[in-house]
Length: 423
Image 1 (cartoon, rainbow, N blue to C red):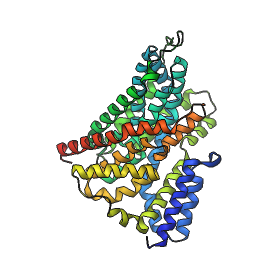
Image 2: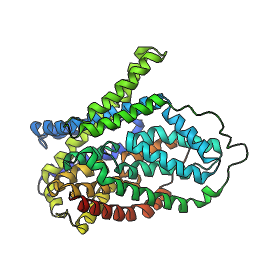
Image 3: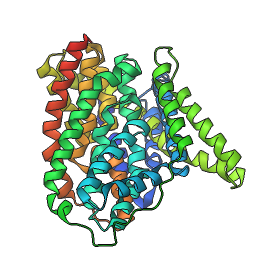
Image 4: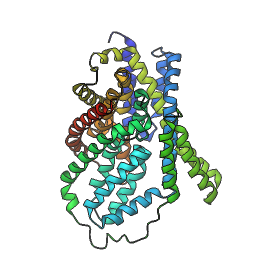
């Protein structure tokens, strides 16, 4: 590190990540990230043309992210997550083991279709409440939402911000991405489920008290919201071969659901529009853009050259395994979003297999530590608000039981599928 700008950029990045992890006084992550990016621009660590280039490259991705956040929020207002909780309670018949299986299904689908943020923010409280009302111990079920928010985000490009970045770097279509990642996704879910059943066998063997499992109330499924989600997913698949940004399909879903609510809902229109704007989470969008600029400064000032000597080249099985583990290690060191921003430019030339191996690392790896992903940190805060303690050692032990074997199995599956499909 002979370049002083590299040192400065790295220190600034560490400061931004430390702020994001601790969030003093509950302040948004962007409070640190935006001034940090401005500071690096001011001292010349990154010039304005490069800043504009980075912002332009991230623009479609964060625009899509904003649309999906609003879509998930509208689904919650339509009662989709409440209905999911009722269906899980009814389907479990008072058995915590059955409830865990249903939680896995709900969390996997929610993460895949509406992104990991929806699972953490909207589904976790529902599952916590469902388990509490049943009289079951919530721990296995709420820990499952944290794990599946990360590992179940492998399936679709829309499941995680890291996926969107990886799809852009790989050049794959929406459908091809999903086809390739289906087997790794299924294997990750299988590993998680087996470990959870064994690790929490004591909690899951306790039957709820009598009278706690009466869930005979009729479940009202918001059919319009389900139909709109189906239309939106079809739109995602259709947009890719037509070279249309997926943002437009997500926006269609938002317009349909928001339009229906504005017509039917009795709340003042002004309040509904304000709620929609709040759901965009502008602070998080600013954080992502600013973090991208900070990471670009770090990479351009020497980190890229340093990592190029460490990151292997090629698409062999051993190379892909190495990439997955390097990505997982980096995600648990600097968080998964900076990790993917750093690694993708270094592996994109090697083609989709290398890019997707990195994706497996940055999506599954964060299940090892709290700092691996922002979603996990958010999950922890949500549970703390409900007086549900989360234990560092418990989370780490679960990670040690699931992450290494998942990385190996999923990467081997990825290698096999890409060879079979000739990718």
